[in-house]
Length: 275
Image 1: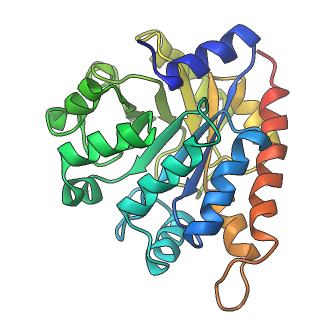
Image 2: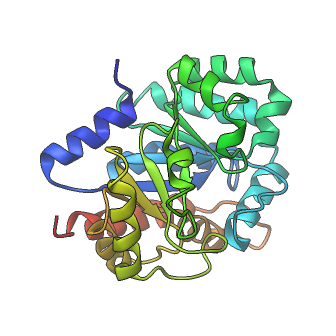
């Protein structure tokens, strides 16, 4: 039985277009506002949604996403509330894939078996856990696959031909290609370099490849969409949240529109790609 992620990429391929994959942090700046953003993203053009699980030490993330995690944790966000957000989203949307993205510690503390059961029940479709390498697949990757959840792995510019088979071995749903070396939101990827690396990955797998890290504008999104099967955008969304807050760091009537308007512009860029 296929997953929502697999179905969505197959649908997009049949339509001759690329995916916009959006990242937002669950509970940023508060649970209620975050849920409004989550519910609004599909209508704004998001094809797949990555929902960040807030964590106090997000080592692979740049300042923007680190700050979003701190805002969410400060507002009381936790794993129970994050999974409830997915349940609430699923009451209105049964088709848009949701991928939980983050680090292993909050999952481990919650309890792996309990987490997988509750995530599947809530309507989660897959996971990206950036600090669990292939050598740890028995820890979470294999159990998640047995539960029916896609486990999405990251490949990077430094993933060489010896390492790539291990990265792809138990990956499902799609491959997330990190287009720059370093942390999120700090540099812009170069199209020619990305095209070459994605081509190398596609020679080894039939999975879709979505390209992320450093995408800030519709023009960049369009350029990268021409290199792969989708574009992942995150830091600019959490920056939009931050810029919309009042002096006390609270949501305003500008917060939700700021994110959704940006998603619409980026979706237009992705859909304008030559494929």
